[in-house]
Amino acid sequence: MGLETQQIRREEYSGDLPDYSHYRPLDIDSVPLRLTEYPMLAERLGGSPDQWVAREVGDGNLNYVYIVEGPAGSICLKQALPYVRLVGESWPLPLSRSHFEHAALVRQDKANGSVPEIYHYDGPQALIAMENLSGHKIWRKALIARERHEAAAETIADFMAETLFRTSDLALKAAEKKAEMAMFSQNTALCKITEDLVFTDPYRDHELNRWTTPELDETVLAVRRDPQWKAAVQELKFIFLTRAEALIHGDLHTGSIMVGEAGGDEDLRVIDPEFAFYGPMAFDTGALFANLFLNMFAQDGHGEGASLYQDWLFELIDRICIRFSSSMSTLWRTERVGDAYAQSLFEDQGHRDAAELALTNFLARLEEETLGFAGAKMARRVLGLAGVADLETIEDRAVRAACERRALAMARALIVERGEIKTLGGAIERAQTILRDVR
Ligand code: SR1
Ligand code: MG
Image (cartoon, rainbow, N blue to C red; front, top):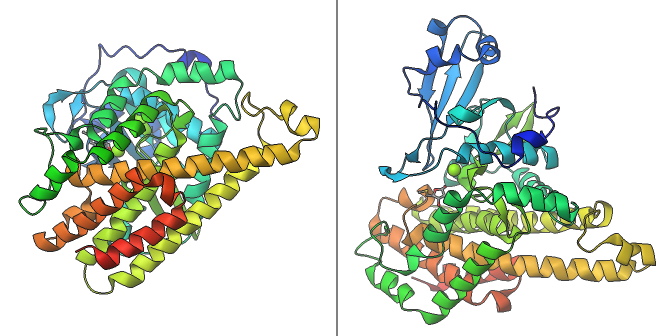
């Protein structure tokens, strides 16, 4: 059953999690035999199991991912492990993240569509079989290689606007939204990773923190002693913990986005929503802009000609911002059928101007929070456990540390001064100043 035709089956998401008592982890050798248990997948691959070739391609921090190719076709298999891949069995993590990932993919497909097609979901095996996108590339890698995927700006802006708007109280009745929120509120373990790794550990001494040492040692200590930074990050953590605005992807960095071609046109798909839950919209928009700014600051470590690409990245950020605002505005005017900002109080009383004022205020608040979350997401990638390849692949440590210092200066500005910077345009100007002045 393709996602286009797949309905969200209420009973499947009533709140009950799958029974994992018969869970068996896959490994590269067992993949072909295990696939014989799924006739529809076997048929898609064609031929017989001895003709199916599996390879492990996961480059994320949590799971293993297999591409399996057969005579007639191919599939991508993602299975949750009972622990964090990056750290190992000493860090257990619930299999239920696969349930939330699948549930989020179904909803993101319904709201927007730029996700992989799901071929089969086996809840008790924490296994999702989906479209093989190995002809695509992780956007982070394309950005490091200075590729320009022009259409990505509009596509990712629409993904964010449509998934956030259509899962929020702006589009849903309160009871429906609360039922959705209740189901996703069980994704506590994944939320806890973000609470710790983004908002807490980078600001204290923690054994899992990693940074470019000794080059950044002084900077790291200065961050931990910075009262304004610490207070402002905790404000953001409070928003993350409490503001259930929409079903957010929860980990929308450039490693969760794949770019490529389909039918001669540029194509983009958003993957890996296992961190999904009802949270602040600005956490997703902030994550995306954070990773684009990180790539921009890392460019000085990736050879001559950085400034041309940095200018393109600034334009890209600007285009995403403009498109996001215009898509949100269109949705506000045409699909605002939920219980928030009800049309009965605005348009139905002839108060279209008040609806427009409320929209302007809504977008301004969202943009300012986006800056704050972007700063928090930038800082964690320099100070905490999970770094980004954009910076980590810079071999010259002094050059890498200089890029990271600029990224941290930007992060602090976005977090502490978000009320003054206010807009992505203001953030771009600040980034340009930092590029010029911070050594
Ligand atoms: C232990 S998981 C580390 C990070 O990887 C994911 O992509 C999330 O960003 C998480 O914080
Ligand atoms: Mg991921």
